[in-house]
Amino acid sequence: MSKPKVGFYWCASCGGCEEAVVDLAEDLLKVVEAVDIVFWPVALDFKRSDVEAMKDGEMAASFVNGAIRTSEQEEMAELLRKKSQLLIAFGSCSHLGGIPGLANLWDRQAIFECVYKEAPSVVNPEGVVPQEQTKLGSNGYALTLPSFRDTVRTLDQTVEVDYYLPGCPPPVKLIVNAVMAILENKLPPKGTVLAPDKALCDECSRKATKPDKLALRELKRPHQILMDPKKCLLAQGLLCLGPATRSGCDAPCISANMPCTGCLGPTSRVKDYGAKAMSAIASLVDSNDEKEMAVLMEQIVDPVGTFYRYSLPASLLHRRVRNLTPSPFKGEGWGEGKKGLGERSGGAQR
Ligand code: SF4
Ligand code: SF4
Image 1 (cartoon, protein in one colour):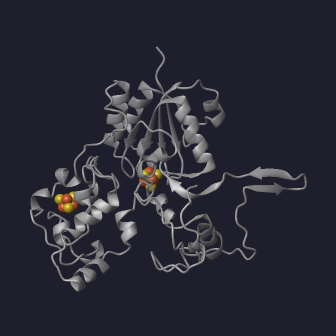
Image 2 (cartoon, helix red, strand yellow):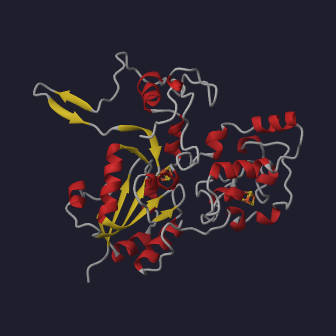
Image 3 (cartoon, helix red, strand yellow):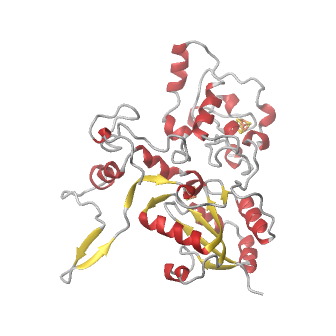
């Protein structure tokens, strides 16, 4: 009997999700035994044309990691959607926009200015930036590059997605469970995030030391204190996002004395992870004095990067639409940008 065909693909990603597949270790051999991997550009020499030649729905499942930033990634998402019975958003970037989604604080022009002209390590006196069409050599060979969109999107803002494997990258245990559920046809309802639907605090080994009533008077960063390795990190004044984050990872960061940064995203009852995390922390502030509260909030370095680290594209705001600063290097921060590019508000969808 022929084995189910499976594909893996990466879009705007760091490669960590591909590593997570390799991290399956001997379980990877079990996966290879049970399925036929017919597309995995990072590891195997299959081409896009091989996928194009397949019948619609020929693949049992495709696992797509990374956010959607370019026209090529959109095309590949559409192609894999068509050729796969199940499309699984694999990892935070695909699920919620992820770290690449923080680029939605700027637009394409600001990003190109920064990356190709203003970054301290760049030497580009002629100010060359990538063009979609370039004529090369004496015979005028036309090189075409994918279009770089203004806005980073999640996979499900691009094509229909069947399931989500959360995490940055998804924990091995969740990947194995998902593959087994597909093979045994024991999948939950379509649209489910394939991880427990409860907060990380529930599975954290320090939960017994988390007071019922937490009172935050000061927030500290991990390098600023000598941590008690057994006590709840939030109770030690560290900004741990465990109360707002989905469980399923077995809290390895907490075990290493690092507060949870929220990579598994929200539980099903929450629409906007960042808003939920902010309100969870704000509700713990032990003061009604505005000045005291402002001092504590000042201790949250980079609020957008803290609360929307993995989920800006999936958030209700989706992207910054006003005061786009000239570039991350010349800008003055959220809400304080000079006019200019910032005059272009809204409409930057692609
Ligand atoms: S989810 Fe994390 S590990 Fe996976 S591609 Fe995105 S940044 Fe990398
Ligand atoms: S706040 Fe963080 S450290 Fe404390 S119980 Fe929750 S996940 Fe664990």
